[in-house]
Image (cartoon, rainbow, N blue to C red; front, side):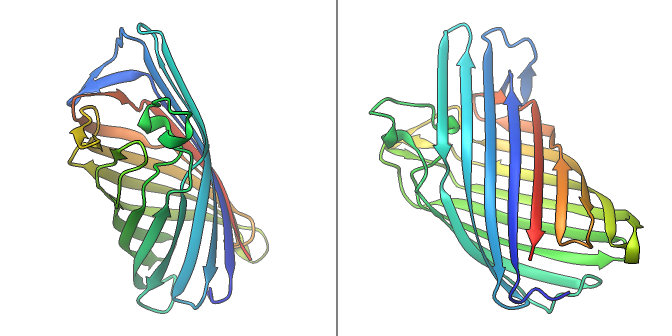
Length: 274
């Protein structure tokens, strides 16, 4: 398969719902103070293959996020564009869907999204705001291995903030990893180009430090999250157009202080290579 000179357009919709509280690793299933978080995001991305091994890409998202604190009768809402991310990825070897390959990548986060300083001076919960207001670097590395109808993939990466936003808020650095496999048990239609497949990944996010605001630690930030992510995908034309659905399931989480627990999450997307 050749990628040089091709473009790929992708759109992904994700929804996350948290209505429980967690302190350390203990989840409060009764949640008597009535905290509820909703995160909704639509992401649009564009990728271009300069060569068979080097691609450039960018993405932007629009978010509608809400938080309600029932007992305190507090309600927060934030909506708008998230930060712009631009970057590239290079594969070490020529593309071969039946063999090993490895990549390294580097993205830059541009603080173009809606954040604290755009809310008429009013403080908003930083974790529901669409934009960070902070420059950032996002390095990554990973591998691919084809095994007939199966494929193994893995990646590690990080998110490193380079400054504080205009409200004095600075996000802690993040490390993340994913390892999993995909399987295409059905190839149907003319030339067997209709593909129906499934995937299963294990993902991890580590935030060992707390966020800060004007140099003061923000207590209810940071932690570790480990997810199992089953998914299904469909392509009618051999992989040029693909639709997919995944449902991350939290297997284990431990947080600093007291935080809202992500109880339900779903992601649906389409991508088209032309």
